[in-house]
Image (cartoon, rainbow, N blue to C red; front, side, top):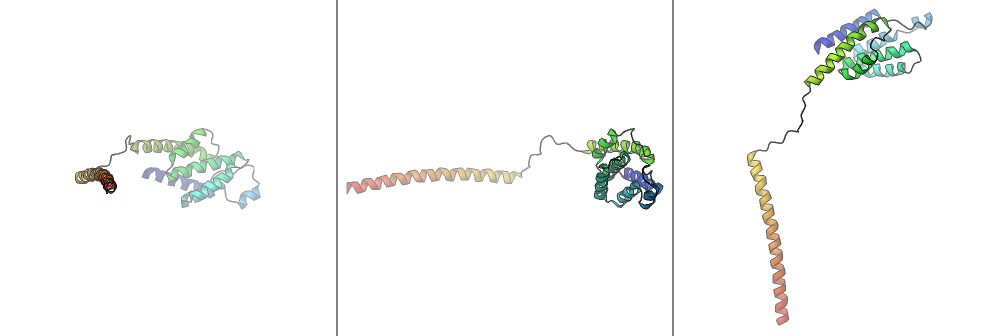
Length: 181
């Protein structure tokens, strides 16, 4: 997983320093005033602020501009991969396979898809599956003590029943004695 993280960092550095294409519909004045969304999201991922990435991506996903929606999906995938959740990224990457239009997004999406598949398969293989939960192993002396206490409890209940029966018998005898007097 260390090489995967290194590859992610290198790709994010390329995106960060190389920049990505901005929407063609933006006015030149607006373009100069605001930083490209790809660059901003790359900075957040490099800082490890994944919650901010997801919030910004969610707001971009609500946009009417398809380029902004594509940016949102791409950076969500990158954040999920970097966070160690390749299964979440895999669904988006497979759905958009071959459909990316941005320059670096188009190049890196195939690589990210391969990494997500590899990470997902390695996670599945690494998970240990237990079909039956392990039975608790008791110490032999503890088990013997438990059995003796259960037997003693049963004996005490039987003694209580016997004593209650004798009590009733003696009360009946006392009643008979009083009647005879």
